[in-house]
Image: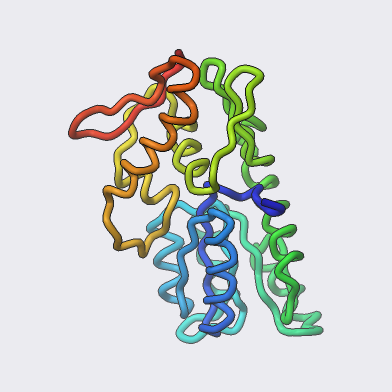
Length: 231
C-alpha cells in the first residue's frame, strides 16, 4: 500500500471526461477510498452540499456549471472542504482564478496519478486539523496516515476496506455506528450492493483485533449497528 494515507477518506470527483473520471475513481477505490463521481457542475454542487466529504477534486470546464462557480458557491455557503481544481495544461490564468475563487490547490491536465495522490494527501492533512495523528481506543491504536493498526505492541495487518470500517468505528468509539453509516464511510454514495457486506468485515475484524487477544471490543447492538469499546 504505497499510497494508503487516505484510506477511510471520502472523495468527491467532479469530472465530465468519463474515461478519466473512471480511471481516477478506480485507482482511488482500489486503494480503499470512498469515491463519489459527478459529471457536471450542478450535480457536483448538490452532492458537495448534501454529503460530508474530506476532499473534492473539481474540474474547471464542466457542463451546466463550471468549476469556478461551484467552488465559489461552496465557499459562500461556508463549506470549507479542501478543493483541488483540475485546470487546462499551461492554464496560468485558470490556476490563478482557481485560487482566487477559493480552491486550496490545482493540478494541470494531463497529470500524474502519483502526483494527484501526493497532493490529495497534503490537502487532507491541511484540512483535517481536527483529526488526531493516531486514534487510540484502549490499547488499540490506528494510524490513518500510515494505514497501520496495533493492539499494544502487536502489529495487526488489515486490508484497506477492513481499515476503513475500523476507522469509522474508532472515530466514534463508544458510540453506536449504524450499518448505513459504515457503508457511507468505507464504500461510496452509489454503492447498491448487499448492505450485509458490513457484517462480513465486522467478523473479519473480530478475528484480527479481538479473538487473538481474548478481547470483545467490537460489539453488535442488535437492530442499531456496532460499537467499538476500550477493553
